[in-house]
Length: 309
Image (cartoon, rainbow, N blue to C red; front, top):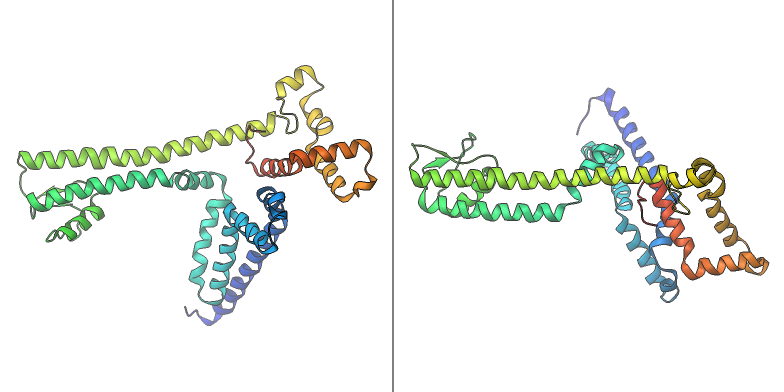
């Protein structure tokens, strides 16, 4: 694209600034979360029993399976293409609004989280429309259109199926002449099964998924605000039998103190452990408590942690 001279350099500067911040964001994500993801999703015993190349491959697989690392990488790639090839490559970055906004993120997840069910429903709809296209081609050819103002060509079975799939989800056929009984049955059943039932099924899948996402969000927020991360006791139990929920999570069971103590054991030489520290270290190694707490704490701070311990 060619820009007027007064706008050319500001656009290029803005493009490279966008690329710089995209790279910075990707690097900050890698520094903050990649070590946690690798530590919690790749088994240490399995790593010790394999070669270095296999361990590296497993780490990359664990990263790409998260989905977020792929997103950050794609963000940098599109930004680089926008800064060096064409500003049109910056267009996909508008989707970042759906990731940053909580409500939009839940709406997108309600759609993408049920792709299998939506795909099955859509495939079934295409099969039903295919049956109606075959019937319309052999018995009612040249007697109807879809009333959308587009050119409707049903001169071949392939063209008829293509146009039915293209226009059929928008509305039922419109007849050129007053309908007889067979046309009435064809039109009525098409409207009931395709326009009413099938589209209602697809809409219902999306709406139910959005409702489930909202309930899950409420459950997560309730768990974060009313359950101790360490012992799992609820606010009501602690307030009734203890010294208050806030004091409990800030002093008695402060989750960060457990992280600090685990890091202290990691940094300290095993030969300098006290008796209690040796016992706790054995328990951490035996039950992989460090990995579990690390992943749970990572998920908890990101808003993923629900009621499982």
